[in-house]
Length: 158
Ligand SMILES: [Zn+2]
Image 1 (cartoon, helix red, strand yellow):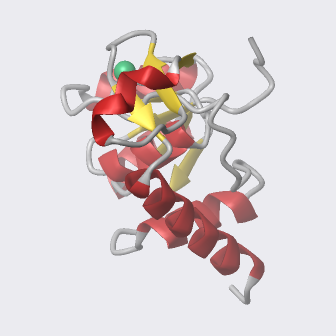
Image 2 (cartoon, protein in one colour):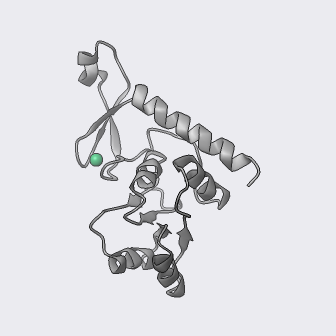
């Protein structure tokens, strides 16, 4: 287990960002059922809080845990670029390190036959926790494109 990478707790409004962080391989806790107090608790336990909620950001900051305010209205590439500029995330996908975008579980490689019904062999992964299956197909390439867009934002003028 690599514990040197940052772990995140993401507020209930930033579910899409949570999915991208998981795909990038970051251990990211997110649930629409978490109350503010539980979110702050995760932050106190060492996860970096990402929130668009100014009040939540303020109460986390005054309790001395690391919280980043994500301005509302930003698109995913801009949010990711902001985190890259802060030095918190690296914008490159290594699927062997990716986590399940749905449940944050770790992925493992599956024999390619799992997707033979698609008429084509794709590199296929299964979530160790929820069993969801992922393959390197069209959807995955769309996410790569968004991450590349984020890279451009991160290296351009702020
Ligand atoms: Zn899963």
